[in-house]
Amino acid sequence: MSIVKLNNRSVKDITAFGSITSLGSLSHIATQTASSSASVSFTSGIDSTYKEYIFYYINMHPVTDEANFTFQGSTNSGGAYGVTMTSTKFRSVHLENDSYTTLSYEAAQDLAQSTSFHNLHNGVGNENDECASGYLHLFNPSSTFVKHFINRGNQYTGNPGIEDNYSAGYFNSTSAINAIQFKFSSGNIDSGQILLFGLN
Image 1: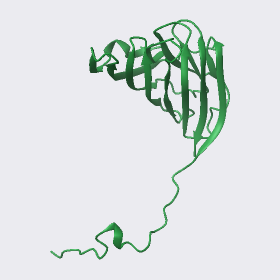
Image 2 (image 1 turned 60 degrees about the horizontal axis):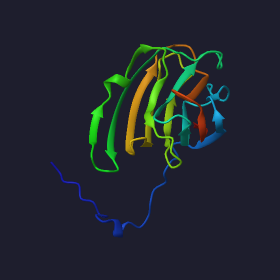
Image 3 (image 1 turned 90 degrees about the horizontal axis):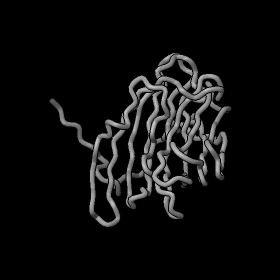
Image 4 (image 1 turned 60 degrees about the vertical axis):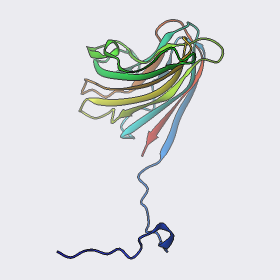
């Protein structure tokens, strides 16, 4: 068996780079800003144009203390939100006073063939400096398969402390998901911004 010897064995010895093919780019579709809003809904721009859509939600601040920040989908352009969904979630928590830390699977936040809104964040604080931010990826919403999603987000809880959230799931529908709604479980969205992008 022969041994392959590399001539450029160190980064400092590299004299040229090959070309790197672009894997895609983000295309801005829409931005919505909440101001004492019951919900934020994207009822257009989600179609077969892109295989992946990304929602960035920034500084979502609830009117009601420790409300849950949630989302659901629609197959009729926002006429109704309640697509059958299965999801899972885990989180890490560290309170400011160092009295509590955890890394836990949140079985109580799972949905199993449910039409409820999925909790992206639980217990977001409503003090002036408390909010939640993160992103939600929705994959191939116009396909004839189930529609997968993943979420990663961070929040300042009402306790107070930091909570890092991870969740994923799928809409168990072969119909196209063509609208998404975000809202808090109780009370309005006092302020915040959500941006929608398509990934080429």
